[in-house]
Image (cartoon, rainbow, N blue to C red):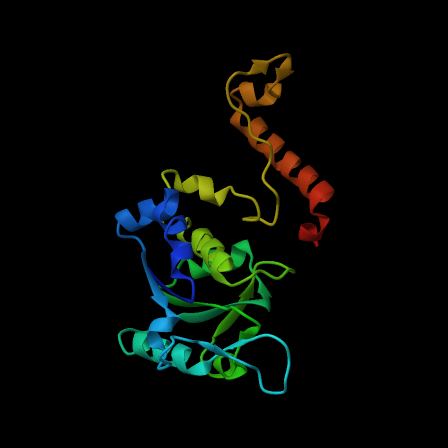
Amino acid sequence: MRIDILTVLPEMFQSPLNCSILKRAQDKGLVTFAIHNLRDYTTNKHRKVDDYPFGGEAGMVMQIEPIDRCITALKAERDYDEVIFTSPDGETFSQPMANQMSMLNNIIILCGHYKGIDYRIREHFITREISVGDYVLTGGEIPAIAISDAIVRLIPGAIGDEQSALSDSFQDNLLAPPVYTRPADYNGWRVPDVLLSGHQAKIDAWRHEQALERTRRLRPDLLK
């Protein structure tokens, strides 16, 4: 998989993309990240990529030209399955979306900034708009990292135990059950006996019951 990220803050990606699972996936050749500074695609001598909005509204708007030049250059090199814009009014990112996107080959993620982007970009270039929640961030860089992490960890071989990803929260519209490790008794706080029983069928049933109970209590909306 290849993920091209378009941003005005390329330095924000240096650490997150070079740690943990994302770094291991790159080292294994499972994913390639390419970070593109949109200031490299402007014809403005001051490397500006924003301007005042028509109509007099407050704030600045990302210009269409640098984004067009960048996306057009990338598309001349390869085909892309999705051109994603991180936006607070996009569809809310979810585990099923991550599952589906982990099977794609090439993705572009455009990080929004300032007041927003020239709407013509959304009309003519963007194939999918994604939000990571009902709140506003300074820019789309953090959502781009979150989306990339959720996708890449699902690529076979990215994590050591592939079955682990299949039992994560939201994979079956349920929250994950409680998990425990050694010691079995700490200050009188004991691990549930069923987990120490060695009876796999009973353990699986307990885990499912706990997942249902936690989902009903904490996220009843998922059961709808």
